[in-house]
Length: 90
Image 1: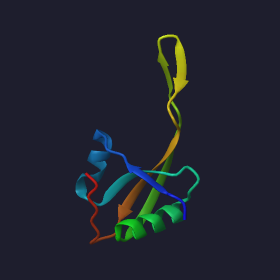
Image 2: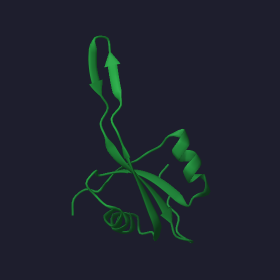
Image 3: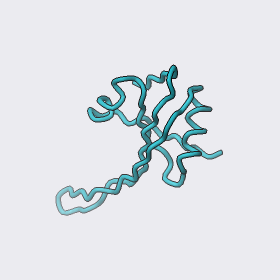
Image 4: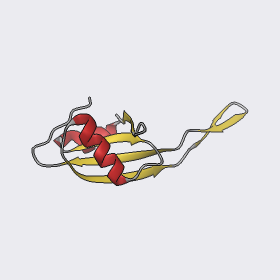
């Protein structure tokens, strides 16, 4: 099984989402689906996952002086944990 879970996403918006302790926001591999993400989270953190929502984040154009580039595209997964499960990544 390839490396599905890349890193937690910690921003003000994700902190607000995960404040109740039922949701966690993770950066995941672009080529995985919701079922694979659910299995990977349940196996890695030993929790019960209720629902998985995914978002494909497109690259944003950036410019430094005369040089142009773009940020990397990635997939974001919002994991809703089942009742009684708790996961703290902060």
